[in-house]
Amino acid sequence: MDAVDKDILGIIQSHFPIVSRPYEEIGKLVGVSGEEALSRVNIMRENGVIRRVGANVGSRELGWHSTLCAASVPEDKMDEFVAEVNRHSGVTHNYLRENDFNIWFTFIGPDKDTVVATLDAISEKTGIRVLYLPATKMFKIKVDFDMKDDKEKK
Image (cartoon, rainbow, N blue to C red; front, side, top):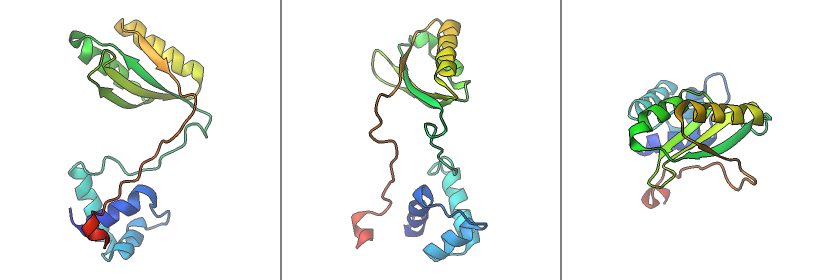
């Protein structure tokens, strides 16, 4: 990844241009053509550097309900449990951790009742209790990665 790629990442993670030809705009900002900017983004997607390009919508601002969830899943039930959890479109993250509660995931739904009912259904189907841990206060939810190392900042 060169300096141009890093500049592109810096722009698209927080300041994606909302214009009819965004990659032309990005290209102008980093000194390449729009076609080159798009090509670089596609290569970074193919290489797994970029997972997705899209808007981050504030679920709370839309009136939706989200929660952190945890479960203690035996190894022999792991694949079944994870498949059931991931089957639900409201699951945004799902991680295996080294802990008694070894599966942690976030779930978002249109309202609290829907979220709780879905978690109950997951528990009923898998036989594994899911802890429902809604936030009581949000401290931070966003991160911007500084793509330049100290040498490049000078």
